Amino acid sequence: MWDGFGLAFRYLNEGYLGPQNEPAMQPLISPLHYKDAFALLLTRWWPVNAPCRVGAAFGPETYFDTTATKYRSEYGDRHGMGVQADLTAQCNLSRRLSVELTATRSFDVASFDSSTVLLGFVFTPRECAADKSDDEEVSPRGHVEITAGRVDIDNFNVSHDDGTTTWVSYNRLLHGAFGFDASLLRERVANVVDRRGAALEFTAEHAFWMDWLHVFAGVGPYMAHSIDYESNTSSTQINLLISYGIRVMIGNRLSLMAKLGRVAASAGRNDADLATVGFALAVP
Image (cartoon, rainbow, N blue to C red):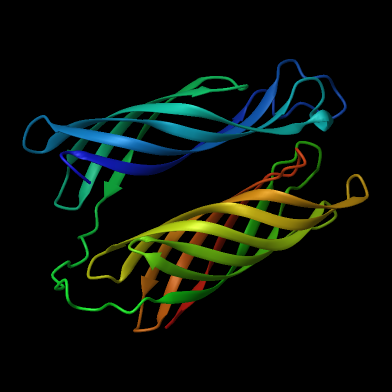
């Protein structure tokens, strides 16, 4: 963004920590956690030699920790804030492909601190062409998106926690890379939970490679009516929805897309992960 500094949006899933195979009716020998986090990081890179560089990042994170301390059935979802610090080494294998080693430390309020080490690959698309004149008017464009796929409920007390979800959205850029997204969602896990509602997110979007590849992320409130078949109760709640994904243009108006989401349930149970694919239609 400026003088070697940038911003990074990171999702870190630490998975299950603890005795996940313990029978539901038996006391746990140690606490059971399912923890993941989203972070917005300020990054800084320094060149080491021609193919390699090192970087550091620091910023706030919000975590989702589904936990049980005595019995699996007495689980609850804890949400909170913390900070995340990263150290990264990256070496180029080609112009667009790099190998990366990252060490991360999370410091979370009301949850446990944790350290992770990750090894993987990084692909850097070519930047979108930016040779338009200042006087050239660019018409604002929105998208109608329809996606469907899988939902996984964070639930330690059921034999299955996966189901289906449908996600219909209208999004629009308002100024530069920033805009909004209005969505209708339905999440359904048979005999466990049925949740449907509407969300309004603040979004940010970035275009690569001659404007045909877009990445985006959003966050905002999600008002939903939920039926919990475990407890045979229903309620209407304001939850939190975080979404992110990619949109690939295959024509002037049509795009294919993959969209992921995370629901933080305000009632303290039934956090969910959403993974969907579908299409988007550009509108004026």
